[in-house]
Image (tube, rainbow, N blue to C red; front, side, top):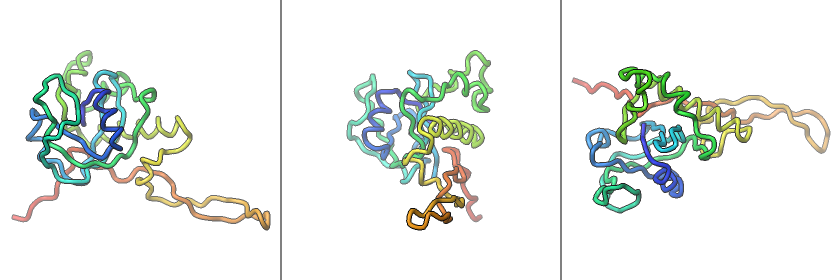
Length: 197
């Protein structure tokens, strides 16, 4: 899970959700990130879950200044390329006060202190938590416009039969179209295959 501010999420959004930088404090976790890891975004100043994405590269370092930080020396140098899965408008964020207390990850903290679990920028959360939050993101996205956004269509893995009318013959025909459904999820805590001894 990536914890960010609305300002920095807007910067990531403007870039097309193609790159994510991690701060120097989280270097050890950041360098473990690799393709097919999954991330969900928590916006700290809005107390809401905003998006999910898939990592598409190994971790690398870059000193280009992109995101904002109160410490001018922080450049979020540990970076990965990403691809967006579900991205919500600010007005549609999932309320963390509704979702956060039910997550396994926050059980180490007293119920009224669950937000403390999200201090720091990068967290490795259980697979169950990731799946739950992303399902809520997808539900909110579908509720907003009646369909999953184009950003999430790479998750289409099933086909359903739908009836349509041929305008020339006015008879029913059947065709296949993608059914948008969640692919097998992999969290930022993705289980890696055991290395051969």
